Image 1 (cartoon, rainbow, N blue to C red):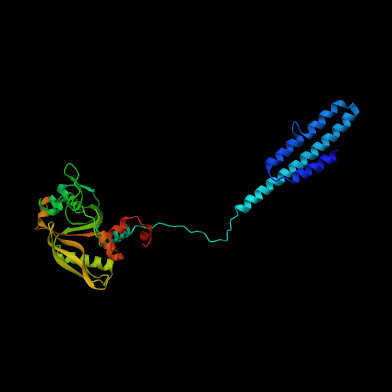
Image 2: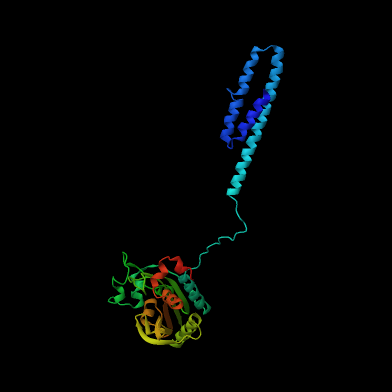
Length: 328
């Protein structure tokens, strides 16, 4: 009788592969209504001697069934583990996907380079507020009330006589108010103007410089800017100074570089504005223009970046196009 049960159990176990199926078989043989329980209930009708003999046989059978079921459980568990390992197997010999690293924005690269060049020349770096007053942004720089730069279509006005600075020149006034000459500073930062096209954006970056001392001349200005251009654009660059007009400098000039356009034609391109500090600006800060002279210059960082990298539309810098930015 026990052998018959064991053979049937082995057949049942061979036909299953999941843990739930095994639990059903365990219940069939060892459960409350299972075969072992049924066999045990028949012992009550036997004599004491036969109960002892048959009870031992049932216990042996029960242990054999439990052992076979436990063995099957281990087999099912191992099969599951092996199948998962096979599914999740990783070929460590395959090449990795690599990591995409970010890079410094081209405007930040050029700004850092420009600051570094002027720092080598001994200029101190100063920064100031982007929200300015009309006095520091216009009046103290000798920009008259009727100047076009003051118009609403050119300047972002706020309230209470405040505005978004249109250049970093206000820092020149702030520094002169608090310090006596000699002064040698550059002021980098963001500036804002109501302008937007392929060469202008409402927000852009400038670096403006100021040098004040005794016996400063236009020759000093030319020497500084020629050396800057040589370092930034290369020693073979051709430059020229062209007369211009700015309210805060007199005389004023613009620096042009010789450039080759898309058609291969050589042309002159404006790079920056500069000049001798207007004596009227000195009056606002209490400097004696008979004793001191100054030079000033201002350059747009986006313009430099466009020239250096051959970019035709300034808006590319601010479209967050990774395909474009990853080139730098």
